[in-house]
Every structure is written in structure tokens, then in C-alpha cells.
Amino acid sequence: MSKLRVGLIGFGSWVRKAYLPALQYDGRAVITAVTAATEKTRQLAGEILGNNVAAFDSYEDLLSHGDFDAVMIAVPDSVHQAVLTAALQREVAIFYEPPISHIRGQIPVMINRLLTSSQVTYAHLELCFHPGIEHAVNLIKSDTIGLLHNVAITLHADWGHSRDSDLCLMNRMSCWYVDVLNRIIGSIPKRVLVLDGYGCSGRMQNISTGIYDYNGIWGIFRANVSSLEGV
Image: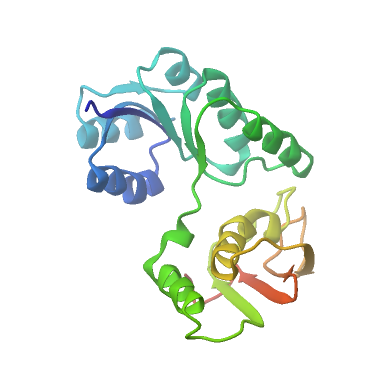
């Protein structure tokens, strides 16, 4: 069986530390195109991927002229919506990073575009595949833990808030962690309460808490992105 041809939109540290090792480990795909914003990064891509991989200086050129079956997107939040929209128009399989827009009012628009798209799309929500989460799910299913009353996840990171963001901290981070709560509890929340804290210019906070009602089981996600502890 021929390998899946993949185009990489973005070649930052996350692509190099996460995407490339995952593709290499899986072994069923070959990278045929890459886009990077600077000449230095394009040279680095050539050194790592080889000179046979087509290098583009913009995602528009890659989507217009690249030869691939699927794209993997890892770009700054501010261009997530533009790149994802362009990839949807190309009608190739897409692996993308949340959030799907950095503008609150555009998130429902993008959700509708994804739901009505004809191609395969997949959000990079890797945390639910962690072996520890799988073990917790199995313990719950086997009644080893007992009846669930609440499940809490706490994030400590030193990333800091985005001062000019239109999204609050829960908008920005909860997609990954609520996905984990959904997996552990085996359901989706019916009600959501967001407690914002340490507000600053824009909407992004340093600290926030989301409380999710799973029909009587409480899911709690606490985030602190200005922690001295780091990740």
C-alpha cells in the first residue's frame, strides 16, 4: 500500500518535537511539502526532511501547488481560522490545532464549516490518548474506583496569558481538557459554569476555572498559565 502524502503547514518546534516523531513512529506517511515563514526555517526543514520535500514560504502557495493527500497544521492562533478555511477549500484531509478561531464570534462559524465539510478532519486533542487516561477509564469501567462524583484536572504552566486575545482562558485551553473529562466520565456536559480570574487587557486571564455538569457528575478544569511551577 502506498504511503499517505502529507504537507506540513508550519515547521516550528511543536512540529519538530511532536508531529515528526509521531509520523516517523507510525510509518504510514511521507512528507512531500512544507511551509515555513522564514528562509532560516525553510533551510532547517531541508536539512531535516531532505531536499526532495517541496518548501513554500506561505500556506497559500503550499495549498495551491503542493502535492499531498493531507495537511497537518501548526501555526499561531491568530491564523488558525484562515489556514483551516483555506485547507477546507482545498478538500484534503486535515489535522489541525485548536482553537479554530481566535475570535469568539467566529468559533460557531468554523464549527459549522467543519461539520459540513466533505473531507476527513481531525482536531489535535492528544491528551485523551495518554496511557494514564486509558488506565483511569478502564478502572472506572471495571468499578475498581467506585461511583464517580467529580473529576478534576489542574493545569499549571508558565506560558502566560495573551494580552490582546478575544478568547478567555477557558475558550483557549478547555478543548483539550474537557475532551479528557468527556473520555473519563463517558459523557458530555449539559451545563457549563466559567469562573474567570485575574482579568487583564483583552479577555485572556492568568487563572480560570470551568465547572461542567455531567448529569450529576461534576467535571472541573482549573488552569493557571502564569504558574512559577511551569508545565
